[in-house]
Length: 185
Image (cartoon, rainbow, N blue to C red; front, side, top):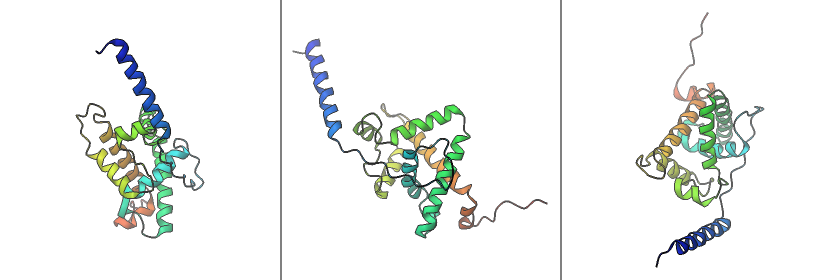
């Protein structure tokens, strides 16, 4: 018979079981952050930069240089561009972006729960898994009771800031055939 006392006991046991499972669940490690090319970061933390260092190559894919060294430099410059762009946004927008990184960080409250709800990759070093994660957010159901439109908004924020940060960089212009702004006399 379901009584209030039995319901309370079942809830307590379920909570303890979830916490025990969470404590043994191996959360993915945040990748190491690349250096900032001498930039003093105002907004992005070391963890944020580590996550971006894995997201940017997947988001920009063929838009980045093919040479490994040039590609790494482009990723670093895009991360610096992210920091500059976000630092210039209103405080409310910065708060929302901070929440986004809290979800992406594997140490967010409990590591398993956000992963189950949001599909955050279990391995930040697997580009296919990152691409699947991004597509899950991109095509998420806006009518979902748990996430609503939040995943799509998070996806758009990540992609738009990444693309803007890369194409604001003069080194990206040659790749797309843009000669740069006209010279004014």
